[in-house]
Length: 183
Image 1 (cartoon, helix red, strand yellow):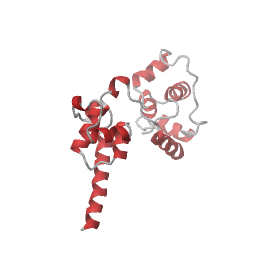
Image 2 (cartoon, helix red, strand yellow):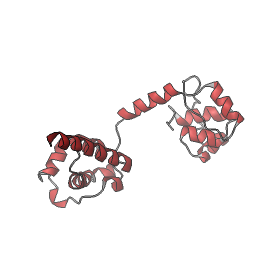
Image 3 (spheres, helix red, strand yellow):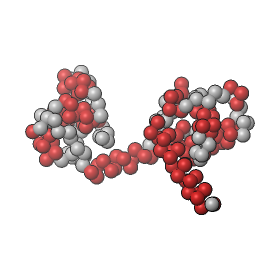
Image 4 (cartoon, helix red, strand yellow):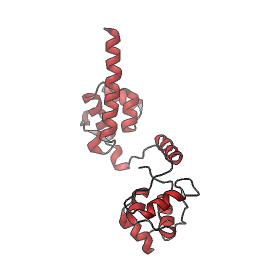
């Protein structure tokens, strides 16, 4: 499921203008049903202006009517809106909290040690670092090399297991095709 453009504003409009269940709205907006209950009660998002998902191109009136008739049926975003959201999501930079930034060298060290097949570009995407930092850790010239403790970037919260698995699989496929052509 893809997140609507402005989830709380969209949820507020859906609560005010439709007979959809809180669960349907929560699933569509990727929010908790209790948040939707709070919006309906006026406790949450009281000063947010509702955003019409029909006008913004996220939903059609027919889709809303279909889901109002069947409370078990999930709302489905229009295909073009979903594609636009997924395209925008790919370009978005990840924010790493300040408390997690000092863990990046440890994560890079773990990746270099446990997955040497990963390219610098893949490590940059996974951890959100620079090529210079990766090179410094690889050649042991990093300023804090003596205190590095290789730790799994997934456990540190710097990347997801699915992203790590995808990067490792991609690196192995590239490595496998290079070995096959050399043989």
